Length: 405
Ligand SMILES: C[S@@+](CC[C@H](N)C(=O)[O-])C[C@H]1O[C@@H](n2cnc3c(N)ncnc32)[C@H](O)[C@@H]1O
Image (cartoon, rainbow, N blue to C red; front, top):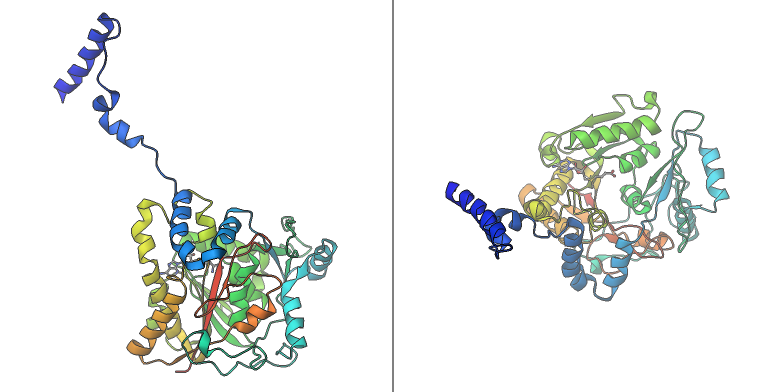
């Protein structure tokens, strides 16, 4: 190597003497540096390339509009903070011509004879697991109940007005929480009733936890996430939105376990379990290079996702009481992370743990909220909100299982 270094120096002097002797190509002298300066494909671009390959065939003609939606500005909803100055916040929303999409859906449901909070809800006789063919129509099987405490304002289709950042109300709590309004759907579908015990298995940073608390129905809510740093973000949200005296130990427990083990620790315990699984976060991934799950460095992790998602869902199923319900959700478009995971988890729960599960028909949800969201019409199991310029929410996949035993 010393000789190599010396040779490098000699070339320089010789070249100088001859007034421009042709040098060896730079790459031969500094091979390592040349190699490391090659242009790297950035994470967001890799994400888009990967989605082009998988979603193109999956969504066919719909893909170009989904793709544009993903790359354009996302739309938000404002989840009102029921612990804050609600009346003031509602007035402010109405001044801006925003509408509570949950309320609109609730009205639509009563117009169609669906259950509302006023006429206590019941779950439909679940359709046998096995896809759309087993689904019953909205007209014959009304089932959705929606807590009157949940209020989420959105601007109408095609209106891209943004909400102002939330302000502190007179109770020193923020008046609303800005989130992708489609993220509220898994919580609505979970259908928490007064007195329920609820497990939020992958809870951080806490948007859905906050929505669960807003229902004021949870007798006991367990909030879990494997990531301590993300849980600290959740704690900050609770601090900004929920009165301290509401978060008593018997009402709220925050834990940081690997959710895959939960079903073994606390079996047959919860009335409701939300499994909002880690996923490829497609909208985020096509826009952000940093720590991108589509980058080469995270390839193995990405490939492991469907397995981890399945393990988390099986664990959530184990943790639910017989008669309880489980909602699985992701913000991915990939059927490998959505329907396939649900189908595989049901298979594992039935074959390996002797459980019986029923898939709940969510057609009603699609019908109730079709004014606000663009739903994909062809999910085998569950529902998927697709990004679209006219209503740029999602992606958000959700699916509900009822545990018979
Ligand atoms: C999609 S995010 C959840 C978003 C959250 N539900 C919300 O609404 O704000 C997925 C979460 O799963 C957590 N997670 C990943 N693997 C986990 C595991 N094995 N057990 C529990 N949580 C896990 C991640 O730390 C991440 O916070």
